[in-house]
Amino acid sequence: RNDTVEETGLGAGVLDDPALSMAWLVHRLASYGDGLRAGDIVLSGSFVRPIEARHGDHFIADYGPFGTVDIAFA
Image (cartoon, rainbow, N blue to C red; front, side):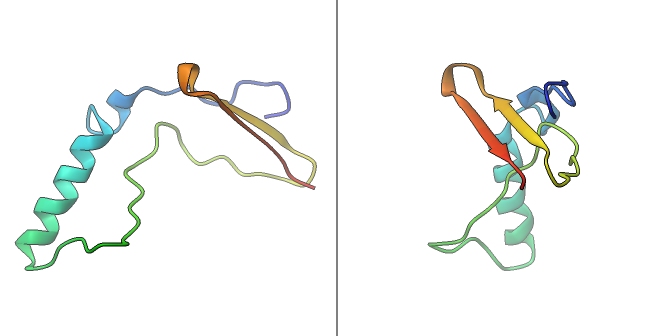
């Protein structure tokens, strides 16, 4: 936030792999007789804790070879 590193994270922080959290969800839903349907959107977990965004904050998320996300809150 605003040129200060707030958090860092690895895929290991989400059940060792984000795909594993998806598999867990599918199996858990199946145990209740439910499942995912076409068009469902699933957030498979976060590598970092939530960070509050305040008026005027500027964030850059760097995903290495996948690129960056840059956002400013007015």
